[in-house]
Image 1 (cartoon, rainbow over the protein chains, first blue to last red):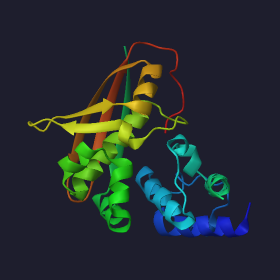
Image 2: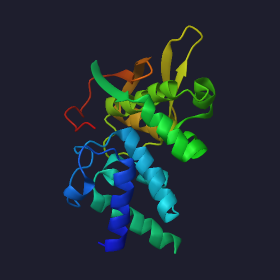
Image 3: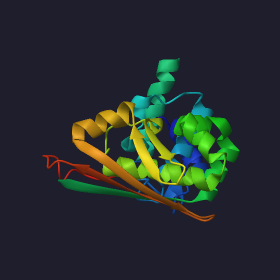
Image 4: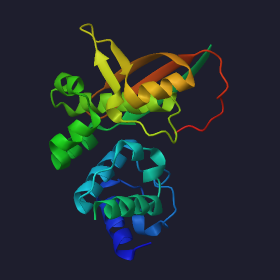
Length: 85
Length: 132
């Protein structure tokens, strides 16, 4: 995983996910919903990621698993970023 | 007949924060035009609508199916009774799951909004799938 990308994803999560724990205590594959992120908070995460990376998540990506882990989010952002390049 | 239930809670303060940070983009990505007009910017009412959308997804066992938030439309009649109408991806999901009807009830105050959705379907073959 791209370190800078993962770091930015973690920053967005820290600011918007309302996790019950510090995101840096979670590994890249930890379940963010189990760590306290609500569905509503995941919307804020999505919008903040769009702002941060200048991307837009298509409807086909709007499923729970996409926002479930740092690794999953970073992979999706990387995919959209590559498509936009 | 099989009954499925979905429930969700949303804190209006979270909606207020979303409005403050993301403004119209938040509203337009999540809520239908009718919902936006009906809520008139009230975070508690928006939170109740969001809770109903999420409760609907749980009742439909959306799981790994991508669902556009705006394809679940929450309405209130003049008497205050709420209902859910599905279009697009949510409608397709409900059809594939054999859901025949949805009932919803909402409640909110300044601190918390809640919604419960009951989906009814003919007895089918997909019981036991994971829930959200």
